[in-house]
Image (cartoon, rainbow, N blue to C red; front, side, top):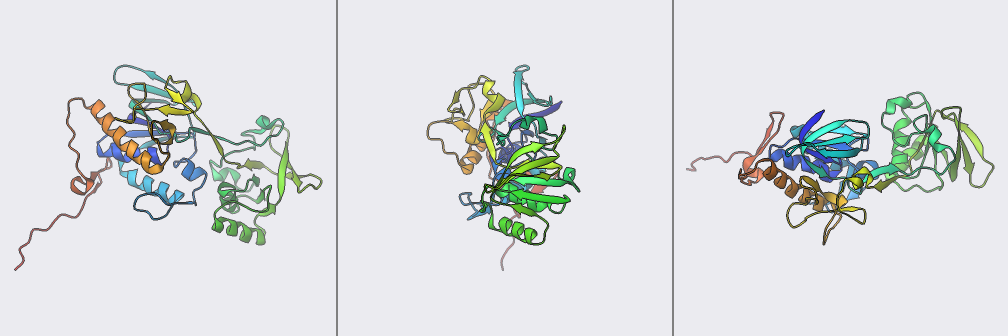
Length: 351
């Protein structure tokens, strides 16, 4: 059983920043996320695309922002349950909640912060017969462990950043990488497109465009895929793995059955106070919540995370007054024994 002060559901930028704000208040956090790595949409959908409205950054790549947030919270030693979704919760007693994931992992916490972005991400699946028969039997929607593809034949389908980046990465792992896209043009970072072009020229990536995978073949596992090229007669390609990377579909998931007030697939919160839901002790921050005047911006999620943590502190420490100090004055003490602080002023007479 995993025990923590605040259980954060969602490892996107809002959830990650909540760890920092909680840490300043000496509260421990643990994060659950359905994706195999932290970062949410930023890491999974557009890691190399620039964001222009983060304060202090004229421009920052989404992946770089995630890396910086992870570095910022490192000293507060958060725990992570990745590749799992929160399914159910119970109120154990006046102090504790219990949250169980789809894989049976049990978490106990004193407050829950739902920071699930647009919800639980589910992969957009190709429309093929019997596709479920091959899932996790050579058909993969995420690259969770690149070493699984060592010296294997891999076919990737898609035309965005994920398809391009994984094609580049796996070209140094797999014995053969084939990238298939229904158009000749790719919608991804320019340097990723150029890397694929260079690897194609070197013979390290096979590129088939415009084309679509129309069927999967194999006895109990993926052994080949059928590809149709620009109206020509379809043919088969032998492969060990087929990875369709067509993006993710956001859904509220099982959290939608928790008894929360839901409005247009978003969780209604009290934004005039602390972003708490209709269930005492459960909060919702970031894109997953809604209230009058709501803006789905990362910087708004940061603000909401800050106020949420203040509310949880008061909840966990009734009657104890918290004196807000700027980090330039108080410094930052990590749970790992580290300390960050501004350089002390020097008292010295000038002759």
